[in-house]
Structures are given as C-alpha cells and as structure tokens.
Length: 155
Image (tube, rainbow, N blue to C red; front, side, top):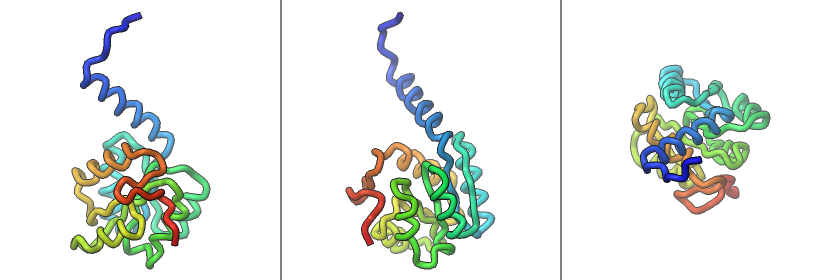
C-alpha cells in the first residue's frame, strides 16, 4: 500500500471525476420551448459527461421533478408565466438556473431575488454554461451560496 500523498492536480482531477460519476445518476433537466436554446444547452451538458432530459413546458417539468432526482434545472423564462417560485418549490433542493432572452442584468437580478441559483442568456454560450455547471455542481448541498438561504424559498 502506497502512503504517498497525491500531487494536487491529480487529487483535483480525482475529485472532479468523482463529482461527474455521482452526477451521472442524476441528470440535468432543461425546460424550454426554444429549440435552438435547448439544443445548445443539452449539447454543452453532454460534453461535460452529464445526462440531460428536456421538456417543452412547466407542467411536464413539474411531473418529472416529482418522479425523479435531478442535479440541476435550467428553465427558459418564456415557459414560466410568472411561476419561478413555484418551480423552485417543486425542485426542492435542486438549483434552478433561469434562461433569459433579455440580456440586461435586471432579468438576472430579479431571478436571483426570486430564488434562482443563477441566470444566463439564451441562446447560451457554451463557456458560460460550463462555468455555471461547475459552480452549481460544486455548491454545498441544500444551500444557496448567493443568498445564504435554502433553495426552497418561502413565498
């Protein structure tokens, strides 16, 4: 048995591999009715080695969330109809990331205020998506680091 410590870069790679293996059991849910946006997002998720499920509407998503565990939820602003908080409640401890067609910062600030983990513009930039995946998947369980509140915010 070798008791030599691992080099830091090898240690970090093993942690990332462990993270990815654990997350493969829980896919990422993508909710959206914009085919280009959804396809780009799913493609980036697959490149990361994760599985993704997509659905076009909120009712389908709520049904899936009730039946399965997901590591993350991406949801297009266009399908929410003002129901971001209810989606966050159904998602429980799963972080919800809003896909906004508006690019101004107000959309993201508003989404964060309503309990979303983060917000990205649609169609999503692959590098931005990968960065958000990294941050969201590395978060402490059941905690919104941005607000210091549990994911399931009170209405």
